[in-house]
Image (tube, rainbow over all chains, first blue to last red; front, top):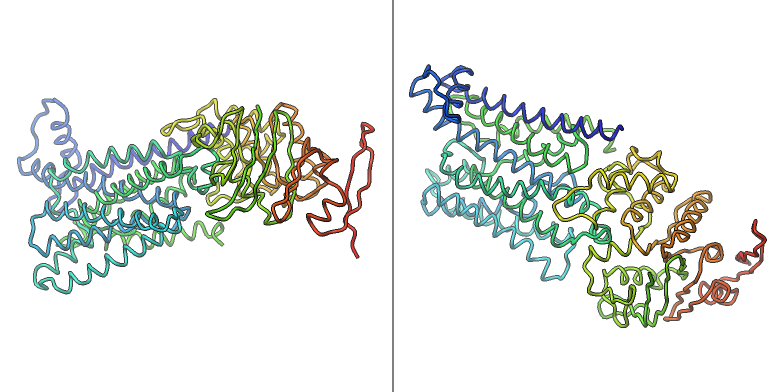
Length: 343
Length: 260
């Protein structure tokens, strides 16, 4: 029936995006100041990934650029883009609002404070990442604790608490910037808050990546519950949903995803907001398809964004600048497509 | 199946809105709840659904207090049909209907073929099979009400709670919904519904509970409870009762408000 063909079409769309990611991945690995042909890239990757005895047609230098520099960055871009978009789609479903982004509850502003403090104290990059992760999670913990004081567990209360915590964190961030050494520290704080994958090492990915994949898998598994929660608390309850537990699990997972990506590459705007919209255009509102679609689209988008960021000019361009330059017009185009529906 | 409400008092926080409610809903019965706005009908419904804890008394389902039941178990026994509403995202009708399967699925599963088949079967029975692939937010109010009834039936409950199922509907759709409610009761589902139309009590109820201001509560057959006097007391309007004969020769009361 038409439902079956509909589901098939949606699955085909998801597969299409996944194939797109693989293609973009290989092409983006070959691009850069030192151009390496695509077939060479494919051979290097294959010889590493599979126990094949391929004839070595590449230099040590090529292998090193691909495996040690570009590959970690692209895997990072894949993880971060997917994570931000998946948590964006989750938040938009949970809060019944398509204009919500994953830092609604204060993750990003908290993480910025954590990272800035670590930079201020001249800590190592690993410590900066850890500080960002811890403060991001702490900020969301604060946000989710405030409604408990008022014994009010409505969504509105949670959103207001998020505004309070974000505002407070932004103020602290301001103080830190004010006292930071403008020659060195301030620059790296600003650079960090605009996002970059430039210094990402395989070590970081092996540390954070598995957590992100597991948490993302949990969110994908509970995606049907997000549909139910989008109906509102009392209706979800009367259908038999344990609302605090389901919503809590979704918020925790979405928050961990955002916090992990902030800790890998700093804060990046736009991705988590726009990719779910693009996903809606392709597969519709149903989170059973929308959440996987958003994750895949986000991953694809960030792979492209990061490649643009390192190729646009002689030096690195911060990621938020690229996501803004690409994202704002894309959002405008999406709004134009949806014009009839918004009114 | 039997739902027994014993000396129930309902309210928010420290405030008791209505107390001493006693009523019984057996399988196949329709209990209509009448009463003016703000008298506590919704509060009563929320208490039965477990959203508010009873201030006193208890609610028993087949002899067991449902107070301690988790949401999932409750939803398998008791389905709620809200007043027509619009969801924030434009889901398909078929997907809205299978949402009723939630109580039969675990946290990590999504509805499967069987669930969709059951949904289609029930939509067929309610005469709304043609809506299957429509967008829920784009269909009419009457159609939405039927979809919500289908969603509740997919829960396979023993008892159906309906909050003003005929409000916001045109005359034809009101009658269609009432007819469906009667059909469902014939399939041994217990139904408890609130309504603003005393006539509906005569048309389809087994029992009527009249909620009045100042905590007064009357319960019995429509004949006993819905009278010119009781309606005057509850709603402060003058009403005249007349009788018409239905197709089977049964006398049916209708009430007409008397204006100045």
